[in-house]
Length: 480
Picture (tube, helix red, strand yellow):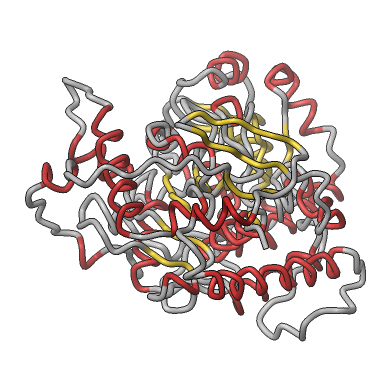
């Protein structure tokens, strides 16, 4: 049986307050304009904007002046003189130029692959897996990008901070993916580097889940614990290292699956506006920006067990048209339960499952699994449906789906507007059987990208998260 975080299951919390509130020297304010930014990929555009690489017409510069953010379109790059001041002279120019040269090569190669519909210019045959088919927005570009990521991408993890608030997170329950990623990054040798000068991105390894668990008082409900912990941590690393100030945080990333993950970034302006935020709660109505932020899946590892989670009945044995079971919370679920709970034998909707009925067995014998958003836009049911080889029926608003710059979600899911919930049965029954069979097969194909492995395996969910970060880093250009 494979589990995560077993060795940390009995972590003793010592001196929590000293970890959360740290006194540091006041960081000198920067009045430098910023960095060049151009739209290489985005969750909205995917690979379609690759052909515009190298142009500056769509570039934007994010300028931070005395704590105020201004976005200037089409103004070109920051002057070399100002940029040199921002990074403290030319001490690390050569090292940074080597890093940027590698990224420039990667951009050109990915652009070439994106324009090659037959993938004839593949770097080499991939004996493990070659992405093909309709589940990808551009399989050739993804394959090329993935191979380049494996070859080039380096991540520096700041070592400052102690468990349980840093470098550690819970690896079971609905927020498990936050702890899984932190755990895997602690032991990773492929992407992690101990040399910050060769890194492409810098990871801030705080756990929002653990900060809330250990510092947030359920009665006092002082959300400022997030502000103090995250702000102090950024002050420490920006005072000790040059990398945060060099890019104003643009080549740094944080990751959280907690509902308050976005909130944790509010308190550091550059973290919020500039840094890569990798979030389960990828809600554009709450200012998730798919051009720089990345969405990753919410996976509920209830016991921490990661084996035996996938599989379902063949399509011919799936006797239930559609299935959902879950609490009535959030803005969308009340309409679903109001229209369908206990009203139809084909569309089986429950708030609480009757005794003797298994949630996962129901998914495995259903053709379609209904996945509405709850309090937040993300839902673990999406991954659960994919694991059960059940075609997901997505009901959400303002949600950027995980890995949507690579995956074509229209090819293996049904997306139903909230206003069409009363017509749900007609919509599903109107899908021809051959179309359903194609979609179900694509769900089986996409499953590899959502599976958790320890150690990680190529193209699994850990590598897909890394790839999403890699794409966002390709969006950031330093002045040459």
